[in-house]
Amino acid sequence: MSLINNANPGSQIELMSIVCRVLHRAGGSMSEENLIALCRPETLSINKDQHKRLPGELKFWADPAHQLWVKDNSEAYSLVRSFSGGEPTPLNIASVVNSLLMGIEMPSILDARYDVDGVAKLMTIMSCALAVSDFSVFGSEEVNRDSLDDLQRKFLPAESRANASNELSEVIAYGHFLGFFEPAENGGHVVDPTEAVATALKEVLEPGVDVGIQDLLAGVAEKLPVLDNGRFRREVEEKMEERGFRRPPKDRLSRTMSHALYRLRIAGVIKLEELSDDPYQVSFDLPLGEKRFSRIRLMRAEG
Image 1 (tube, one colour):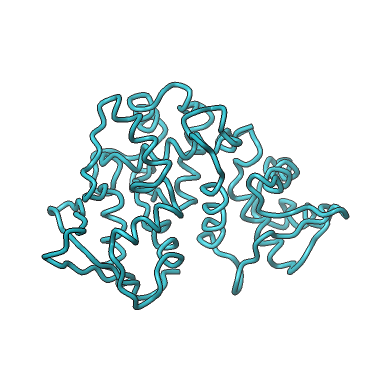
Image 2 (cartoon, helix red, strand yellow; image 1 turned 180 degrees about the vertical axis):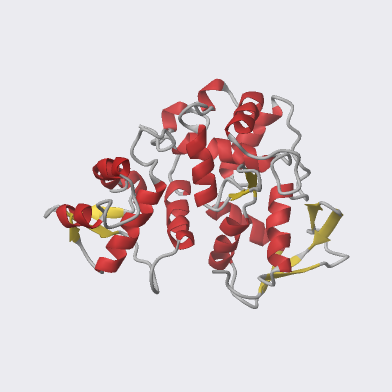
């Protein structure tokens, strides 16, 4: 079973998000009967096909491998992790799902034996898209089903590729939901991990405290291993190098990560500082040229 196959449980992001919000409002456990009744199409903005898929989604996200909610002995559901504050936003839900999926222990995401419900394949293709510059905000291509298929055929072994007909669209949907892709003008997407990075920064940095940018990058890569120097990304880039991909030098960020951090700097979320005599400076690959920075400070929490 694969969460990126649009016929399978786990692929219905909107429905999963609705269940999270309904359980949050309940403030405790809720029977499956009541949960399904509250999620019926005439009550919430889901179509009849999604309503039929609800039992499968409930079962999928109750699996301990990627558990959003738990089903108790009385057949009632409750959230494993509560959302602070009011109604959980898409970003709140995406942050929890990111933690679940990227925290799954898989010795290799390129070895199908270790895949967990299609998560390895999703992480592989997202890592590949984040590694190249073509799909970045100032790149030459948009992310769509055809361009993503061309990318995976160019750089990934056959067993790590998604099916173009019923999986790649869900890869794009998950990439957008999890904060790594953004909609583009022509109906496609661009690779822009700003939202995911902004959420991770709040978990890695304390507001007002300067840290070395290398330390920050290591912390973010631990949280989001599809990003620069993360364990998933390293494995995928090594495979891509066998097919002609050229990895940036160790002291240089990918264009996608460079854009995300620089965008957060412009928004006033972070402050970046350059120290000319710092041997641990990191180079940002930006449209107007290269910039080097040494220190980073979280000025305010995004979202």
